[in-house]
Amino acid sequence: MRIAAPQAPAEPLRGITLAVVGVGLIGGSVAAALRQQGVAARVLGVESNPETLRQARALGLIDAAASVQEAAAQANVIVLAVPVGAMIEVLRAIGTSLRPQTLVTDVGSTKTDVVKAAEQALGERAAQFVPGHPIAGSEASGPQAAHAALFDQRTVVLTPMAQNPMALRQRVVHLWQAMGAHVVQMSPEAHDAVLASVSHLPHLLAAAYMAQVAASPDADLRLDLAGSSFRDVTRVAASSPRMWRDIFLANRQAVLAELHGLKALLTQAETLLEQGDGAALQAFLETAASARRLWGETHG
Amino acid sequence: MRIAAPQAPAEPLRGITLAVVGVGLIGGSVAAALRQQGVAARVLGVESNPETLRQARALGLIDAAASVQEAAAQANVIVLAVPVGAMIEVLRAIGTSLRPQTLVTDVGSTKTDVVKAAEQALGERAAQFVPGHPIAGSEASGPQAAHAALFDQRTVVLTPMAQNPMALRQRVVHLWQAMGAHVVQMSPEAHDAVLASVSHLPHLLAAAYMAQVAASPDADLRLDLAGSSFRDVTRVAASSPRMWRDIFLANRQAVLAELHGLKALLTQAETLLEQGDGAALQAFLETAASARRLWGETHG
Image 1 (cartoon, rainbow over the protein chains, first blue to last red):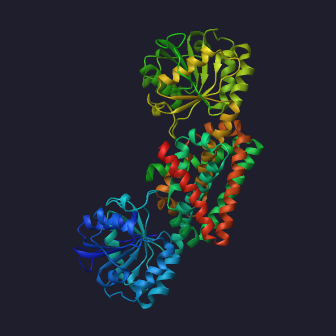
Image 2 (image 1 turned 135 degrees about the vertical axis):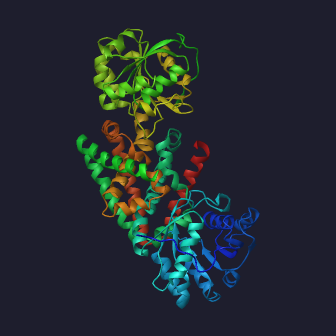
Image 3 (image 1 turned 45 degrees about the vertical axis):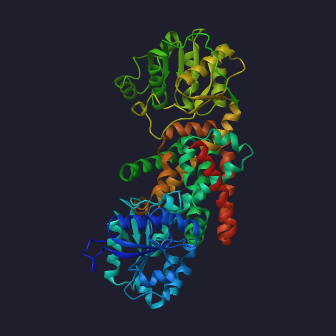
């Protein structure tokens, strides 16, 4: 993980035309944040869902609706904020209309597949595409949940491609810094392995556990007596099923590896319980509690 | 689950001497809440940890330290707030000194074992013991985390014993209602089965997942990129290892049954991922998302 050093941008990041493809929570928040910071003077929204588009316009997140081709022809910066499963299609649509000076980036939760899709769809123009992923979000979705402060103090991972010119990488760094984010850089593979562990697995876990409780014969009673531990552990189970289906499929090897590791630990806990081994069980819990408390002190 | 109907208490719940055995988060909060409501005029604290006792006194949660025997001889109401593994020992110590008019209740997270311990330790006087469990808590522990509002709008489960006189059950109901809680009643077995699902399993899950991340070779990088999904899913992994060891052991059959069920669902998710079955994976996630959203609307 390299921390990107601040550096003066080659071209002033003010008054640009921004195109956001997918104006949901993340896309809408990018639009709001870059407009608030004076970076974006005009925001075009590309959105296939008419109701989402209407809301984004009503909320003032975007100035006008546009097709992918119009966005590619007019924008200085294009941010792709569609589910990762839809990325290849959008990149293909952009490819034919992209101007040479336009910067393209994305906010997809997986990166190996997005890099591959960009190379396939954009060919030589893939040099203009700098892949990224803001570690920010919410179980809420849609433009109504979008806000300009979503990325403030959050980390954004960039996974630049070998062909990206340094100046272009720096522009993306500055874009995210303007939104209040910290930027780190790593390989797409490293990103996907880490995120499988600290983001994708907890989402899968929360969904499986929530499905278990909901499917129980006395689900109503259980849900009535569920308290704060249940609330926190299951919160992300409310996240968009379509978006997460795409993420799990796009990163399935890494997610499967983490799931395998977790099942082994659950089996270990199961054995300790079956044996009634209080000392070992407490040691197991101590490891987790110490690590979580330390993380809480430094990452809140 | 029966909702206890409000009913005038046989003896006014004002100005009593309260003894709290274990003055940590829950015991300290009971003391603070009953004092604030004017129910407790004097609070005795029984606590084996000298530092905890000092803090509870410094914070004004208790008026004086007492032995279990002194508490049993002086208090109108005794609330047992020690880890469930320590309950039998405390009940035995109380048994020999308990006055016939004294009410004893507890806040233990498991109930079948506590009922059994009370019957063993108190004999005929078990009629004076009304077991209970407030569904409230925090990953924080100790008297410094205690506060009078901890039980406000929370649910308290009572699992009365056949020999408890109705008037005594009602006194416990009124005690909790005075602290702002909703009271429900059920059998100890039903309580333990439900709580294994909605409280004990999420704690075990959070601990196992946290232990997995902490033990990974690149733990520092993972923890640096962990965001809000990680934070929420792991929050309860910071809970007291000793307390949770006791809970898991006390309720291990029910916890093992839930763990078994969860592992089956994780294996199902694993199979869907391995097969790359997007439609089934999305359906799996939809079930969880719908249930969690519905719960969030009604239970916040």
